[in-house]
Length: 421
Image (cartoon, rainbow, N blue to C red; front, side):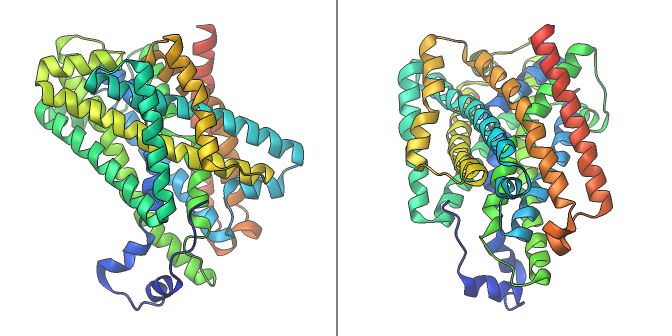
């Protein structure tokens, strides 16, 4: 991995209290923004646009609730890396049998391939919508872009973090602009956030899809890796301080990711639901925004889709490196991994499959892997012999298992409906 220790003198100065004011947070910002990219990948576009166009602001509370769960989950993952100096796959390999570790590695790789499918297709679709480039040539251009982003790692982790954070900022500005043009009913927005409710079985199924698109297994694996050796605490007290700083990073990153997801639904509700239109395809959403709000709104939507796809694709590649190294102690060059994982999306695009339907299918595949990341995470962070002074409080473990029960139950329901309904 590219994530190596930050300059020791900088970390020591902060932890020793020699750096005052807002600057003392800076060395700790970054890891959560990398992990947060997984929460705004193109799979979220499909579910959020559909939810907003079909049910208006009704399911905004689902995004808010999912975001709260994401804060807890990513906090546990970051804390595991800080406390142990190891990532979740490494801890799993040490505590499970070899066969179990191999199984966990295989399912994690399948999940990451499904994730990469959504991200790669999303970026290619963004190019198609913006420049009318056919999907297959757009996919090859996406290939070049994804390699270029990985090249940032050669300049060090700060350059990579800055690059990804800059891309997130572009997505934020794109959807802020669309939200401004859409002029939503802010009273309806408030009701949607604060009033949990459903309208029939279809809304529950869609809510499950939103949840599945938000809780991303590969982000859980990756975040523990991003914090395991970035700044190393010299004692238990320093580890607790590092985690407090990292929690600020998580809160800021998750608030931004949640705001982006909410804005997708809000825009769809304000533009499409008010006209009685149910939009399930992203190309239809692009054209609808152009007709309703003008070409700049459509361009910002396509740009957000493109940037989100490229950024999250690179993060998925990093996660793949983490799970292979952690579960089976093997590693292949990132560029080779990137090339291998591009084969399935290129094949699907070449086959002419509807891009939005492929995005939705990828979210279903992701559902299989959520439990295999969440259960070990809560289990390990609840053990004092592993976590030391950063072991979960009883209430934290209780909330963690509640989240596991909710996420796993809803995703089993989603899979059942997908296969048998």
